[in-house]
Each structure stands twice: as structure tokens, then as C-alpha cells.
Image 1 (cartoon, helix red, strand yellow):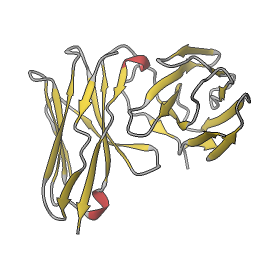
Image 2: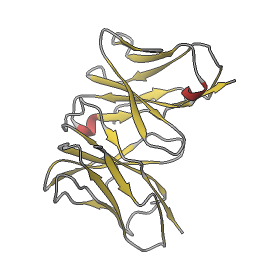
Image 3: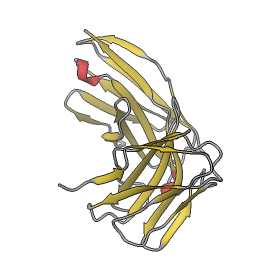
Image 4: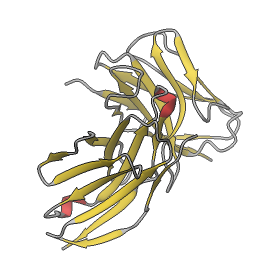
Length: 114
Length: 111
């Protein structure tokens, strides 16, 4: 079955540590995205990528980094510079970057900073 | 950042009733519109794209009103399983960073 996967489902981090969230898709989609969702809030775009080895900052990129070395993979690193990292992180992909087509979401990673 | 506004609810609706909610958007140049459903602690999933002519999928009807800049979602014969948060998503035509998610409307169907 085609889909988008994220791991781990739950992640606990101590302050000052960097952590990397995994996102993999086998939908052959060109575009991939990372969002953050806080309770009672809409999704906010962190980074997006429309092609391998290229990515763009979203609205809240500070304290985060990404890479796109393969079409299927778009990992997100939450660095110690992110002041309030506890949130629900969602990865998504779409057939193109234009935003005119459906975005498919992974099951998410809940990050808690202890 | 262009705004997308939704009534957060919750809307408490008896099973079998019809419920409708709207989503307003501020950018008149917006080109694509979607309704997503998000269950508690789960990822959003596409419910419907919203076309200019309106569209229907079973018990669900979505409409677009460009003059007043809102989209609507109507759910007929509501089921307990319809309980969820419904997210309005608007693309202002600027690519991925032009995609704006509303905060969602929380719907509770009561037996």
C-alpha cells in the first residue's frame, strides 16, 4: 500500500538536545512538507521541498532544519535553538508543490521536551 | 499571512440531524479550497475538495461563495462517526507557502 510514514510516534527529549523526526513516502510525490500543530491551533508550515536537494523555509523555520537527499525521505531536525518544541509534528506530501492538489499526511510524531 | 477563519465550536448535534458550518478567507485571489477531517490525536485526511460549482459526496456537500469569500460544509443525516474536527484549507496560489489551514471546527454528534 502506498502511503506516508513517520517515526517515532512519540518522542521525549531533554532540553538542549537535537532530535530528528523521520518522514518517508512511497507515493512518488515530488513535494513534501513539515507542519507543526499546537493544541487548538491550525497547522503551521515549517519547511517544504518540491524536489530533491531543494527546500524552502515556511512560516516558522527558526530552530528547525531539514534535508531532501532522496525523493522518498524528508527528515526534520528539531534543534536546541527551538525554544518551544513540544508539539504534534505532521509530515505531508503532494503530487506537486503548487498546492492545488490534495496533501497526504503521515500519522504524526508527538514531541515532548522534558 | 492570509487569514482563514472558522468557528471553533464545539457544535453539539443530535444523531440524524443536518449540520453546516462555514469558513471565511481573506484573500480574494484564493484559488483552491479543501475540507479536511481530523480525528482526535490523528492526522488530517482530505474530506472534499471544493469546486466553484459546488460538489456533493454522499451526505456531504461543499460550496464556495466567492463574492462573500467563504466556503461551507453541510453534513446530512449525521452519524456518530462524523464526530471530528473539520479543517478548512485555502490556497492563495502562492505554492506550498500559500496554503493556509484554519484552526478547525469541532463537531460532536450525540446519540
